[in-house]
Length: 227
Image (cartoon, rainbow, N blue to C red; front, side, top):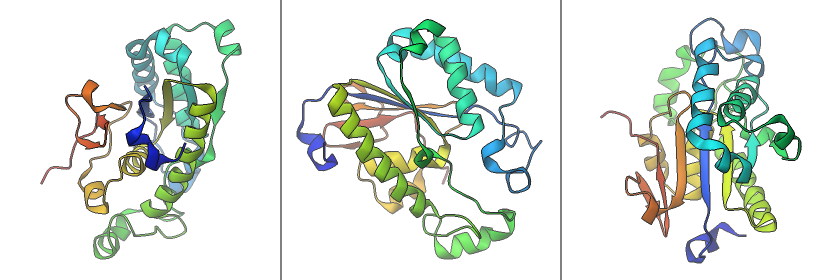
């Protein structure tokens, strides 16, 4: 279904986007440009966070949902924790397709430390600056847009009313930006979700605390950067 038709539909759809749990990079144990971003695992705290989110989402939602996950290790481990915490059995999982999608990976920060590039990011724009050897958030937005189009076609084919996406903070912000047609200036106001934050996109009438809305859709679970 083309996204420009979404606001005019009566589709009952709830999308839950979950940032991965605390990782060993978040704790400072590992540096992504030294060990490979894709290989970073969760900390003990991250595993516990994922199980708590699973309990919060519940078995009913998890059973109904189309499930998508970034192929990065910390995202896959988070999804496994969510499934365990929701109480969905191994037998049930065997019947449920989980889609690994590389388009949901974190923005690629390249192979050099990020900190020395901060001034360049300020000069060229947080959304537009391309990390040395990596991507810009704008690049992440492009592939996230492609994923969203594919996801909505799958939602339509399956007549799904629930989607669970386990991914990364900046990828979540790009997804929300695309879904709700936010501006670059709106994107720049968004704070990165905390580890294992749950961001919900649904009918705005069911989300009275929506941070942004577009048509009949709203988003909750995000905050703005402090001024």
